[in-house]
Every structure is written in C-alpha cells, then in structure tokens.
Image (tube, rainbow, N blue to C red; front, side, top):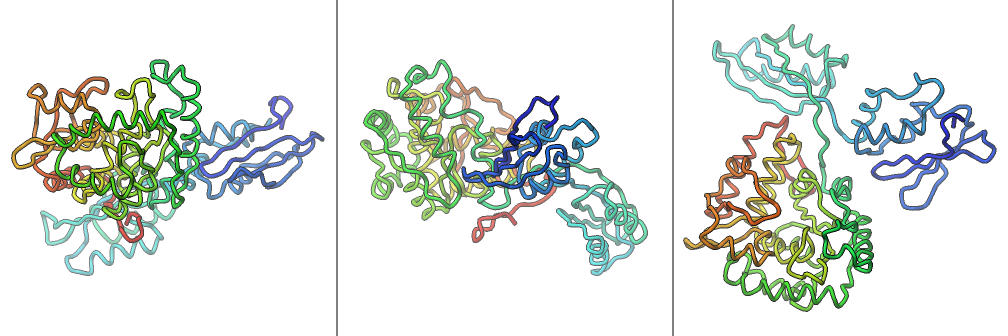
Amino acid sequence: FPAESGLSSVDLRSRSNQYHIEQMADNATARLLGSSSGNDTLVGTRPSTKLPSWRDVQQWVSGEAFYSVQDIRNSFDLAFATKDLNNTPSESEIKDLMKTCLNTYDRTSLAFETNEDGAGSLIDALELFRRRGINLTHIESRPSLLDPTYSFFVSFQGTLQDNNVRELVNDLIRHTKNVTLMGTEEVPWFPRKISDIDVFCHRTLDAGSELKSDHPGFKDQAYRERRKIICENAHRHKFGEPIPKVDYVEDEVKTWGIVFDKLQPLMRKFACKEYNDVIPELHKECGFTRDNIPQLEDISQYLKAKTGYIVRPVSGLLSSRDFLNGLAFKVFFSTQYIRHHSKPLYTPEPDVCHEILGHVPMFANPEFAAFSQEIGLASIGATDDQIRELARVYWFSVEFGQCLEEGERKVYGAGLLSSFGELEYSMSSEPQLREFDPFDAGKQNYPITTYQPLYYVAKSFQDAQERMRVFAQSLKRPFNVRYNNITSSLD
C-alpha cells in the first residue's frame, strides 16, 4: 500500500465471500486472503510496488455479487488507490462490474412496423435481433391503424453505446419502417430462482439483536444475548439447509402460552373458517399448543406439503421489495425470537408469536397462498413506486384483511389475528370498512403505531386473487413473469 494511504490492510466484502488484503512484514509484498466459509485461503501475493490493477480486481471478484455501486466503491477506493489516480476505477467501470455480479442489465425499448403483411414478417424482424446476438425481454404486437401491416413494441438487453445495438437499429431502419427509439433504463436485480433469496435475506432494516431504548427488553442483557444468538443462527442459514432449531427456555414458553391463551378464544369467534380449520392439524403435525413453541422447520415441512410454501428464518425486518420478492417463490420470512416476558401481550416488532399464531395457519390454505404469491410475483422487477403500492396492498390484506363468510365479517390478516386488542376493535362498528380493491388499497396510507381506521373486506380469497391479478397486470414492467413450480424459478 502507498505510504501516504496510511493503510496496512483492508477488507473487501461481497455477498458470498470476504477478502482481506494485508501488507506483508517485509513491506515489499501484499497478499490477498479469500474467505467464503470462515476459513481463510491464500489467493495470491504480489509485490506491493505493483498494486493490483483494475483488471486484477475484475478477475478476483469474477462471479461475486455486490450490493451496490457504493459497496464496491467503498471497498475498492481504499484497497486499490494509488499515486496515479487514473488507475482508480471509474463509476462506469464499477457499474459494469456490478451489473455482471448482480445480473442487472440496461434495457432499451423501440417500436417499428413491418413493411408487409403476412406470417413471415415477424420472423424476418426477429432474425435481425438473432443475427446481432441481442436478447429480447419483451415483445408486443398490434395491427397498424393505417394499413394492413403490424406494429411491434420490443425491449431488449443493451444500449445505443453497444456496437451490436447500433447495427441492429440500422438493420431495422433498412428492413422495417417507422423505427422509434423509446429510451434506455437500468432494470433492477431480482431473484430468478429460489436459492437467489440467499442474496438478500440477511439485509434486514433493523438488527434483530439490537434493541431501541423503548423496547421492553432493552435493559435485559440476558434477553439481548439470547436474541443475538437466535439472530446469528438465522443469518447463517442457507437455502436447502434444515432451519436451525431453537431450544426455547422456560420464560419464552411461558410468554408464548400467555399469548396463546389470550388469542385462542378470540380466534374461534372472529377468525375466518380457513384459519380455524387447520388448527387441529397444526396441533398434531407441529406441536401447535400452549406449552410448546413450534419449530420453524416443522412448520416449513407442513406448509410445503399443504400449499408448496416454505419458511425462511430471518433476523429482523426486510425491506418491502425483498419480503415481497420472497412471496413470489412461495417463501415466507419468519423471525424466531420472542417478545420480552415482562410484557407478553405487547411487541414493537414481529416475533415468533406474530409469525406462527398470525400468519402460518393462513399460508396452509391454497387460495390464500395463491393470493399472496400474486402479490409477490407483481413485485418482481417492479419500480420503487410500484413496490410502495404493493406493500400497501399487502398491509391491507395479508396483515389487516377481513373477508365475508356467509354474509358475516371475519378476519384473516395476521396483524389482527396476533393482536387481541385490535382484533376486537376491528370487529366493532368504529372503523371504516371498504370492499377490497387493490387499486384503492395501493394508494391508501396507514398508521403503524395505532389501530387502523380503515379495513378492506374481501368477498372471498378467490375474488381477491382475481382482483390482485388484474392489478398486477396493470403495473407496467419490461417483462412478464411466470413461476415454474417444478424448478422453483421464474420463466
């Protein structure tokens, strides 16, 4: 490292690996250590007078996945700064590497019309894309209003800075007519297969083991240490592995029992039939009782057999995008820690009581599970504004939704089913009620620290799913998404 940098070592972090670069004792060489499972492996050494070039960096991190341009820059600016600033990677170089790592790409859209009518006109046009090695991501066609030809709207990977894209445009101008460029935009990374969830499941908005000063367990060091251990186990979990078992202690089981006893009579009275019907089966298959906190692995196996859903442990709250993306793959994210025993009927964040007592029974119902997946599929590749709309729809349905059952209002939202106070309030005449409409719910703001002033009531889960599908189709995206149940991936 240059003497003026003041550095003797630096860490370089990606999603799957960690690298450590350190100055050797002779001050003449540096070595790079790579770690993917806690065991350091020597990647290589080189004279420190010949610092790694940007191409060296590209080779070292080939196949790695970084979170953002800033993550890469934070690491690389320190590790590879030299006296010659021209050797520092540019923003565009960083972005190019990031896109390779994250499977993101630039999307360009254009429209054109064929020169003649006939079945072969589209084939001829598509041959131009194939010849230039360009991948189409979306295509629409419609008859021209002025003559018997067809108009096509297409999106594809690449930009006008790419030689093959410029050549394609020239080809289209020669062989078609009315070629119109619509623009270029960067398409965000999103998971393509269920194992891709490993990429983001530990990116929690809050640290599950770190508590705010107003949390009931803030001053309880033993409770905080306990949560830390549980969160670390969840953080290390990988897709395909059994979910770590938690040996809940006496105080935790007692807290669960208090919540269980308080809610069960209300569930029988206010919860929908789909919820109550699976409770006996959960009792038998997963130990769903007042004196036992079910293990997430047992819950996951049960749900997989019922609706194809699995449970994924997390250490805290995920972003709306990440959480909803999981639903697209039939993955429900769940915490494993429990609220503080000093206030068993209160929690400032989702805990295992909320997840299991509120959410799990509903995910055992095929119609509700399909409805939830519709929300998830709509989130794939969505814009930030669309994610905000979808998060509101999720809030007013999966968390705080009500439905009609033989003309009577019942509850299916987990936020209500795990909160005895709001459950009773929601069934009173005080709150406002509206028929479930995702177009309306997607624009409706909501409070998070008080009872909801408004609840949406679905006619049925089938009706809610159909409405959700129509809403999802209204969201403009550069591609269509279909879930492959056999491969657990997106087509």
